[in-house]
Each structure stands twice: as structure tokens, then as C-alpha cells.
Image (cartoon, rainbow, N blue to C red; front, side, top):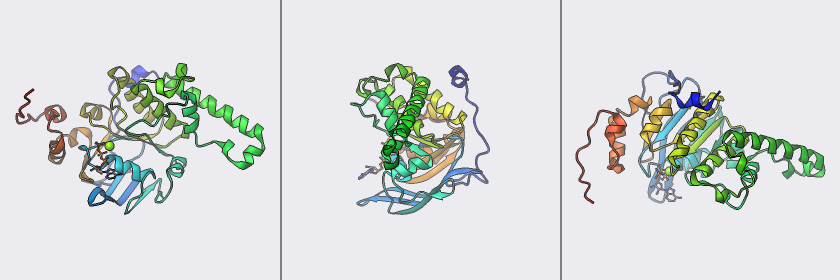
Length: 300
Ligand SMILES: Nc1ncnc2c1ncn2[C@@H]1O[C@H](COP(=O)(O)OP(=O)(O)OP(=O)(O)O)[C@@H](O)[C@H]1O
Ligand SMILES: [Mg+2]
């Protein structure tokens, strides 16, 4: 498969839901199901999701204005934060109270809105740290160095294969700090793949990425689906969402306020309202293709 193939119009997955479309609509084959997930910070309710299902082997975009609770929801689902209440399951098994490390071992991995690549480690060391198969950490294996060595070689070969796919192989010995912002985003995505995930959650993978790398990032996201994975990603750029997402979930003030195919969702008044709340400056005409914004004075 060449990357040129995937940069043309990607094939969209359809027929993902069951019954009438509404927030929380059931999916034919959900990989992740969340119920009553609630997180409050002092007096502020950041997340209050009644019910949501993420369709398997599809690309779902999670959109919503700043402060809608998207990152907090990611943190809760992946064990980086604990909710006040609520339940959620991955492949039918509850993930409640599991640490982020154990969640990753189950096959659910996430990347961060602000990249977490460790600047003072090399690109290769960052990749190795991403592996959940660090046999060398186990006592039994450390008693048998040859086992550890064999595993280490396998991990390195796998890292190199992924780095090559992401065109970062020539940077393997460079410090992550020397990479551009976009390359660090690529490294973070590459590192996530070290765990052989089933569900990859990307928090604003395109933010701050130089346009020259955007297409490559988009292609990598599309390839994750081709390789059988499920993707849930947060993105503010509606053109990108429209281009690659099979399904869109809209959050506002901690709740899921709309769902549907990208085209349908972008016509939805709840979505337009949610964005008007804090995105007065975005061109909703471009979002929906049919709305002309009331003139907001833009004096300089
Ligand atoms: N650790 C925290 N302590 C207190 N308040 C928090 C904390 N984390 C998030 N919040 C608040 O929770 C709300 C949701 O934040 P969150 O970062 O989840 O939004 P978001 O949808 O990811 O926004 P953005 O699009 O700007 O990334 C915001 O009002 C935020 O200020
Ligand atoms: Mg966020």
C-alpha cells in the first residue's frame, strides 16, 4: 500500500450505529462503552457523559469547544485520572480503577495534547520506553540475561520498523528534543504503536504541526484503520474531521450533545451552538458549508 493511495479520498465506514441517531446512540460493534462517567474539579463539572459508544475499526472524531472536557474524558478512559463515578468497558471488560499502564496492556493507548516525548532521550529510547513488553524489568528475566537480550533485540527491530514507516529512522540516535514539533507528534504516535494497540486515542494530533507534515499525519491515522485498529481523535479543524472521520461525537460542557456522520453533525444546530459558545472566530460557513456567520467586527 502506498501512502499516495491513502491521501486520496479515504473510504468511509458507514452503518456504524443502530437505530435513530441521537447522543449516546448504540453502535453495531462498539469497542468502548462508557456509562455515567462524571468528573468534577471543585465546583466545575468537567465531564458528565451519560452514555457513549465508540465504533470498532472506524475513525471517530471527538470535537467540541475549548474546555468541553475532551482531554479530561481521555484521561478518565485511559487511567490517567479517576472519575467520581461511572463505568466504562473496553472489549466488554471494565477498565475502572486500572492504572494507565494496565489500560495500555489491554490494548488502549493514548497520546497527549502536549507531546510527552522525553527530550533528553534518543528517538530510539523513547520508542523502547513505549513497549509494554519490557521483560528485562521482571526479576525472572533479569536472572536470565539471554532472555532479556533476545527480547531487547526484538523490541529494537520492531521500533526500527515503525520508525521507518514514520520516516524517523534516520533520527533514531537524535535526542527527541532536537525534533520539530510535528516530528515529536509523529514520534508520539509511533511510540504508541509499540504496544500493538487495538484502540488509539489521539488528543489533537495535528495541533501545532507544520502543514508539510499534516498530510503525513493524516495518512498515518488512516493507515491505523487500514491495519485493523480503532481511532478516537480530538481535533478542532473541521476540514480534517470531515476528511478522515467516519463518525463524529460532539462534547460541550462535559456532555455528549450530538453524534453522527461528519456531514450530518456539521449541520446540527447543537454543534453550531456549541462552537458559537467559544469559537466566535471560526468560519462556520466552512464548517457546515451552508451558514453565513453574522458579521462579528474584526477591528485590528
Ligand atoms: N486538573 C484540573 N483541575 C481543575 N480543573 C481542570 C483540570 N483539568 C481540567 N480542568 C477543567 O475542566 C474543564 C475541561 O477541560 P479539558 O482540558 O478536559 O477541556 P478540552 O475539551 O480538552 O479543551 P481544549 O479543547 O482546550 O483542549 C475546563 O474547564 C478545565 O479548566
Ligand atoms: Mg484538550
